[in-house]
Image (tube, rainbow over all chains, first blue to last red; front, side, top):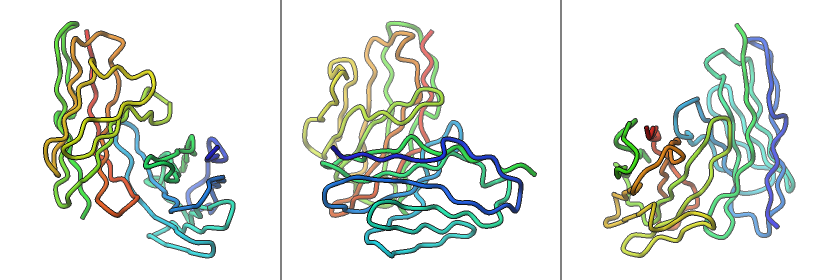
Length: 108
Length: 115
């Protein structure tokens, strides 16, 4: 059964304190892994697609990486405006299998 | 690019009335659109998948006669909550996917409150 697990559930960091979020997956025939950001009361905002092990993508303070079993979302020197829930998902049978998300809180 | 809009952003209605929510892909053609609902502090729950010009496919436990979905064009899908009740109060979010792509792009969501 295809599955996506995210850790930690929540992460509190001081402004400027770098860290990583994890997304572990088991899926037959990976057709991409997606990262989204969701702010309270809003729809998810697309961040990255990764297709193959070793691939990396960056956007501002975020960098996503992919291995054969997991993906990491590295956040470098975060700011309070980076506070959000970060979701990862993989396609399976024309749908997306979602992780439960990591709630990231950046304290000034 | 890849912008999806939803209307309205919030709606309050009386129990027993019907509410229609629109989802539009503004700058791409969405061959497939998805409707989700999300309860506070919970994950997205897929309700149904619709392909343009076809009947929607509903997830187990979602009543198709209560949640009517129409995907009449490549840029518009509508969700109608019929005879709404307080337990239907939730955050409804649509997403759209272009042909040949796996990424879904989400609308901003609609907050429905049924009194």
